[in-house]
Length: 356
Image (tube, rainbow, N blue to C red):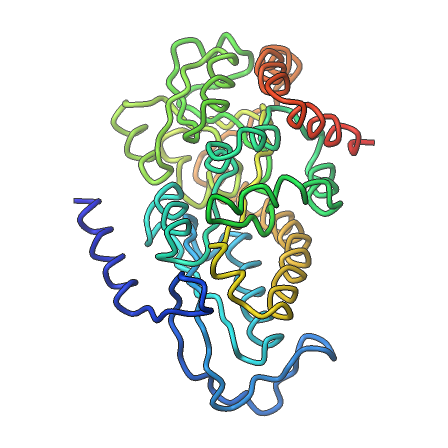
């Protein structure tokens, strides 16, 4: 049924699409409305949208709700992109997995059926294994360390490596620190013995959870609540915002601060669509992606305590743990990934060097 529903959705997307940018990918085109009186542009260089300008709509798949910090940042970026291009482009965000799971959305971007998606780093590592370094356990000491990595230019080379696979990585957004949550308190790796914990669809994530003492069980995020409720799995691992937003506290009320992953989510775009833009519009979009990477970190921090409060009021318990045993358990996973290529080793060393 899910596949059938998705097929119908995509049929609608395709039927409404017009070929845009001359790059082979599709995007819908509409006439931009005249700007509202008294409206202000973001800065002096932004173009005011002009009457009768044809607006190309870039469809962006997103798997979280409209309350999520990433959605809020992307929505602001869409408005800024519309203004900066004089109404030539807008980004239409479809939240809540309306266009399918992250894996489905990623494939739709590659095929050009949609133009953009926010996907987990673990999905992209299946194309270029070196991306696994960005999502290694305990690669970042803090969210501030991660922000420094994402905004320093350290990832420019690896981002440029994907274009031959029909997609471009435009930005890395924080998804906070992922922690274990289950139907019982977890304080040491031994507490996870025999416990099936949902992880993202990544061999690295599976190996990590197995090393931590549990059983890594890959599954789409939208299936987690029911799977825990029915006893198919015992819990998941995610950040406080997603935990609260999806109400996972109702079925797994013990949230243990293992902080084992600060895996990024990546904004990916169909390469043909990107290259089909004028050089000026390409640069505008790239600059905005950098600007809104920082904005998303800010929004994340602003929403964190509210999410935790929501879960606590519903009965969730947040448990501080000593992360040292978990770090030690994950060391073989880190060594395995960084030994696979010189690029992986160099990238890991660069990430660690920015911790100071």
